[in-house]
Image 1 (cartoon, rainbow, N blue to C red):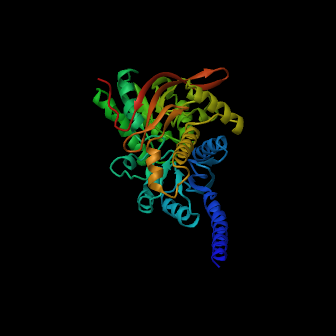
Image 2 (cartoon, helix red, strand yellow):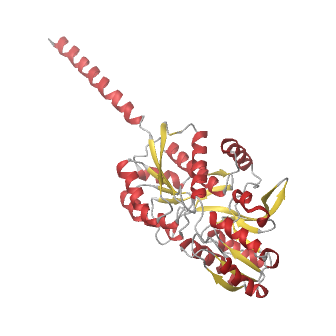
Image 3 (cartoon, helix red, strand yellow):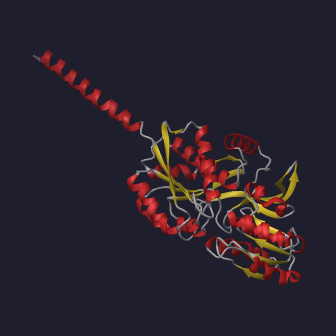
Length: 397
């Protein structure tokens, strides 16, 4: 009888393990789900597509796997509308059961979902939207940014324009919404503190088709200024730079912009209008690093065009996510473990050294460039670099 009991006990354990083991395997084999939020229509369509392409490119390189699990990306079109942000985020988290959120171009969209992701403890890795408060006064342990805080690069850019480029009096133009004002304020801070004068501030509406009335204002005061500082993005940047040149202002009032406005990807649409203009940026395709040379080559081979700064931001966002997932062995169901690992991520990126600051915003180089003909096409050519620029950057003493 005792022997029979032992045999039955062993058989019971075998049956139990046979039932549990496949179930455990099924759980561990579940994909890591990432909700990717981006605009696929509207003024920022190109930015959203480029970020999407960069994100997918890195996942291609790692075989769409991290931490021993497959990666699944579920895309959601925000249309660049803040009102849609919470709706799309809730759908991804509660219906699609994503473990992480990534992407976002428009700062208003990022701000609109800040409280939701914090309440739900869903990590959000922003690959563009630069609302500075998200990594400052409204920071959240669940929000990281791999691109920039609006005004971050501009702190360094404004200092450089006065102290190194020698432009002392500037006209300021930017779209009349949060990112436009944040970047303009960042530029003006150390430009003014260095001794610079802002002759006039002009803020056209987002998605302005005809800049003529605003450029007419610039032309009236051109004699009182040394140059124009501007920030526009997406299709707005193409229209602005083209119309600025058509107004004959490029020669009389040199244009110095944020990298978003003179991104390499826009030059085919701008033609000669961009030639000779200057900008400051955290990424352009001429950055001379092994990582960037390989990135540009692989991206061009896959998509038939050069990457933009938004492509690189998507690529870096995916790489940071994958490295953090690998560090925790794929256990993304534990958001605290994931964000702890993400804080420690650092690596050489196409743009140069990449790491997060204490507020989970990127620290990066800012490159000073001039648009020049390289071979048979215009490119941003690096002329100088300001290293290790964070969102609280201060001028060198």
